[in-house]
Length: 442
Image (tube, rainbow, N blue to C red):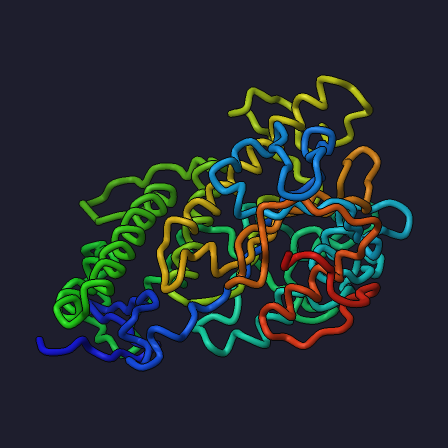
């Protein structure tokens, strides 16, 4: 081989009835632009329900000398990659009467007041991630990716007169159009990495199904041929990518009771273990970004008013019930355990992103990863001083490693800043966005 191959960004590996996307490789960029072209910027949202026990969340010091609080301890390996934002409010999330969780979840990314209804005449606002997806989504196979853990009803009352779509979705393509999330790891994996080839013969499709071929196995020959045509750096990237896809594939298939067919064997039950499902979904986000399948992703760890019981944390009550703590120490302690576990999942995502090397830094360096809940204190249903983390450097546009404190800044202003970072011209957003949030760039 005298010179590395030049590949199209749309190159797919083909195999027995299957197609597989590739990660972003140097060979996909023109030779003259490889040193100068920056890696693309990505945006991810990590939503967690029922608020946070704020006394164990909020750092005391402001600026670069802030210390990790008990809830944030698991973020120690990525502390220098974090912005902690205090004093940011989302007042459009306040409901008419009761229904704080659903109304605030509808406004979580839209910053628009939700119309109170149990019917189909729902209305809020387009969410910030979908504004971004419209602007940058044409560059990737999927304009955006919506993932979650808990499915939810599409109709009916889910919170004091607020329709279920408000409680179960944070992505809104339009004021009355929620973007449903995928809650099945296997389905999400197949959508991203294991497409059936529309040009495959029926015999090829039947062979893959009959033998339960891994997506890696199915495209192995095409991958081997490509491997020999790549430069050293791209070969390393491809090997790391295949390893990640295969490991995730094995875990997802184990959860879903799928795998190579070995006769009439009853598949195991899906345990529904939230720990396994969460890690699988977060790994999917990393691989989707690494492969440049999308640059915008939202993830819901639960729906509004989550009734999950965290038995593996030694708890017997439901999350939403604990959030109405009534100042009882036992409820505070339970909330602190849940909050720590949620932040640990966010820390896992950040560390996985930080481990992916790209041109000019890491995947985390080139991303903005937003963590928050629909409210602050669950007992008071506070829509002020929300718990907000923003990780990554967004390609140099963010200056992390600090705790920033504001006084009643609209959450919509943070979204205006993020949209501008991604090249979207925005002066207003939602019901109360008036301009960019200062200080994010240092």
